[in-house]
Amino acid sequence: MLNKINIIITEVENAIASSKEQVEEYRIKWLSKKGSIKSLFDEFKDVPNELKKDVGQQLNLLQNKAQEKINSLKELFDNEAGAEIDGKIDLSLPNYPTLINGSRHPLSIVKNQIIDIFSRIGFTVSDGKEIENDWYNFSALNTPENHPARDMQDTFYVSLNPEMVLRTQTSSVQVHIMEDQALPIRTISPGRVYRNEAVSARAHCQFHQVEGLYIDEKVSFADLKQTLLYFAKEMFGEKTKIRLRPSYFPFTEPSAEMDISCTICKGKGCNICKQTGWVEILGCGMVDPQVLINCGIDENKYKGFAFGMGIERITMLKYQINDLRLFFENDIRFLKQFTSA
Ligand code: DAH
Image (cartoon, rainbow, N blue to C red; front, side):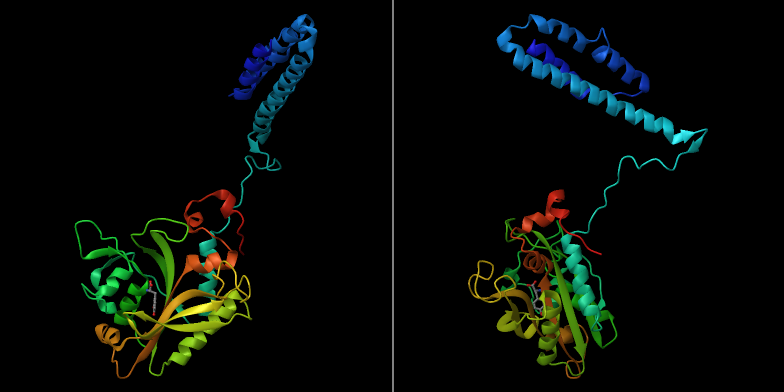
């Protein structure tokens, strides 16, 4: 008996209908006086007493499920019939199926915030290419072939053409801008970059950066520091402190890495900042005069600063996300937690 009930439960659960008539056929088959469920109820009196409780429960479940199914299928076709009255559409009917609003991807939210922050102090936004030739990604940026600094970034070469790469850094856009645009220059360029890295919680073969470039006649390291301090406070809050540590990049001299005071523990020490109270967020420096020369700019008249940051890193710090892979999996449970204007 239980077996028979379960077979009909499966039938009910899987039933679909393409017309009102078919729904009626289901109703007659399951729920009418001669229907299968009615005859199971008739058989119920012969079930041994010790099984009556279980079988009874299952039989009631079946009857409820069949009734619900008929109701929901009926509703489908009732709505359809009501949608048109004398050839006119009934606009008072509820939307079907209900449309769910999407939300912006967290990386887009943070990218837009970064653009907003720099726009307020006069930076324009420049676009670049994701497939670059060797000159723009490396050589013009003081990283000729065989330069050891090429090992800092594992590169994807575009097949058959060793000259063409998937850009490893948005710094490539700097070169195009310096070659093409009138001076002074004050711009940021957000975009996707690629590196041949094993995918893990902390690294990915694709990620996003924002590059910044400022070239004018009297640009100093103090301007760089002040610009980045303004950015850090706007992005992470008024109380945020910054710290610049000497570093090395082939296209800046001097070069630095910038840390911000840990937003999680407020400098006391936690896992995110590895108990130091500081977290690194970007690389920066004064544009190396040789790079200005490479791009046809008078290195005696002009100076500049540049910086580059990872959007994933900033987003992870802002929202306390601990696995980089989440950004690329498109899991709706993750994405729907982010809202923006
Ligand atoms: N391109 C560097 C990287 O991907 C980041 C960077 C460092 C950009 C210093 C800059 C800079 O513009 O000045 O690691």
